[in-house]
Image (cartoon, rainbow, N blue to C red; front, side, top):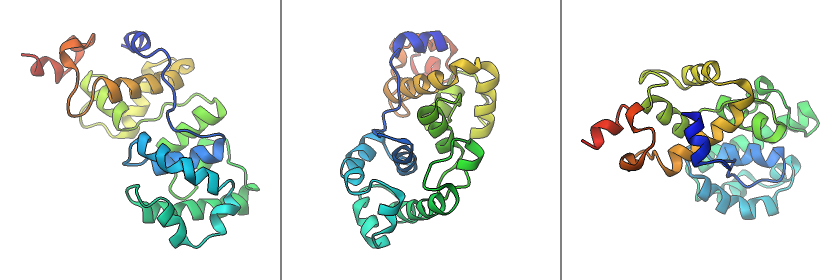
Length: 204
């Protein structure tokens, strides 16, 4: 299955636009329950206005909320951006930590976000499970329907060579985002149709 996805999306990559680890943390936090396209539209101006944790703390919370207002859950996300900025300054000298477990201590940073950051920013093998990865894994029978995101991650890591974790993560995202979509998957032309629990029913 990974070989098929590799053929389909050989250049799969993180589509969140960023220039450093700190921007990636903010962008990934904003991407929760939101498309990368919308996040990139917002961060185009956001990352011009705010360059560092200090910058996010220098404005009232209400101003930051307005800056990201078009993104879902913007109030809570703005609070977390300021809280994590403060923690980065207080505990890490303003530098984003490279360790996943340490990253998850930052407000608003869960396991998925931490995995994305260590993988993309620091080139550490990781396999982040977002909605696309979870959906594809379950449709193709790699994981059980009832599995939690953590169980999906553990299964994928067990079945995938470590050196392929990061690339496989992006290729599964592209497969789910552009081919095996949630509402209108391209089942008739899918090279993995015979493995898919839903696809075989759809094309009958």
